[in-house]
Structures are given as C-alpha cells and as structure tokens.
Image 1 (tube, rainbow, N blue to C red):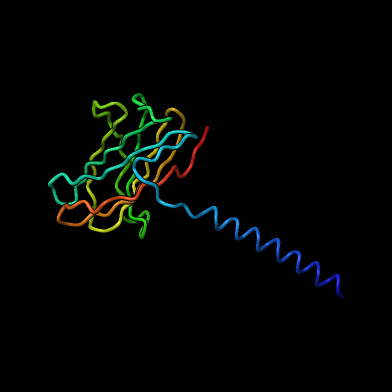
Image 2 (image 1 turned 90 degrees about the vertical axis):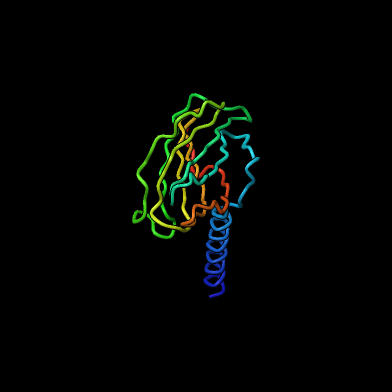
Length: 154
C-alpha cells in the first residue's frame, strides 16, 4: 500500500510541475517600444487616430538586430480580443511609408474598446506579432501594449 501512495504522489508532483511550467511559459510580460529581440525580427507599433471617427492609421516599424527591414511583406488583421471573429477588420497589407523599415495601414474599427492587431511579416523570416491598443469613439489614442512575437516560423 505504501508504494501505491508513493507512485500516486510522484505522478501528482510531476503533473503539478508540468502545469506550473506551462502556466509560466504562457505569461508574456509587456515590453517597451524600444525593446529589440536578438533572436529575430522586432516591431514598434502605433495606432494613430486620423481625425475620422474610429479610423486608425497603424504604423509598424520592422527591425532585425536593430536594423530596419525595408523589403518585407507586412499583413495586418485587427479584431477585438473580447469578441474574436465577431468584430474583425478585414486583412490588409501595410505599405512602406518611405522611412526605413516603416509600414502603414489604415483601418476603420466598428466601435470603441480594446483591439488587437495581428501583424504577420515575411522577412527576415516569417514572424507573427500581436499588438493590443485602446480606441475611443472620439478618436483619441489611448496607448498600446507592445508584445514580443506570438509565433515564429523558420
């Protein structure tokens, strides 16, 4: 009987350690806009009001090891994290602005609240970033949270 409880205790402790490791790996602390990833591409993100209600000018600056990446394809999809797939802005391609590594896209949001921009880049290697931002109906920018890449493929 003693070995039975020891096996169950060992199994429980292993399962607990696995779950704690998985939970710790899913928590991603916000980073500053100046943060750069030495492991691959990084972005700086802004959602600027245009003066038109609920319209935003998304500005993405793409770098790799601190250097601008100017020949990438950048696609942006925006939706509300609280209601994914219900309130979604169609995918658009961000176009170069003329500044090194900088791309921009214009989107019209359905209403005020928290929004998330899913940004997919193809160079220097394929990477996906998720940037959250707040928008209000008056057109004021309420800041954004900068996150490291959500996924990367090589």
